[in-house]
Length: 64
Image (cartoon, rainbow, N blue to C red; front, side):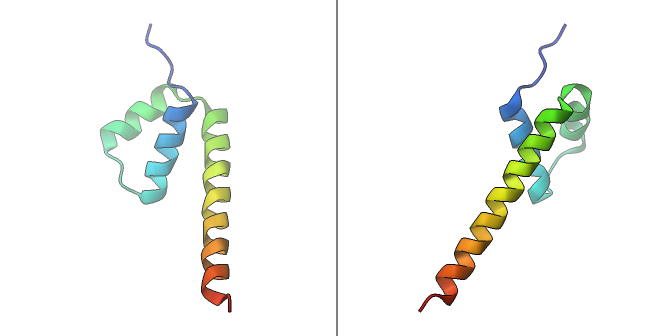
């Protein structure tokens, strides 16, 4: 029996998905044993960080 991937593996997979650079073999492996709850939480965190980064950049550029 193989060990199921943990939360950090899910975060890594989500971040690679954001970039769009993922090998087919890795994608197929991800589908095999990842916990859907981990993926949802990792995706929500990544989106929140991305939006926060964009807001920070805009505030720095627009600041007087």
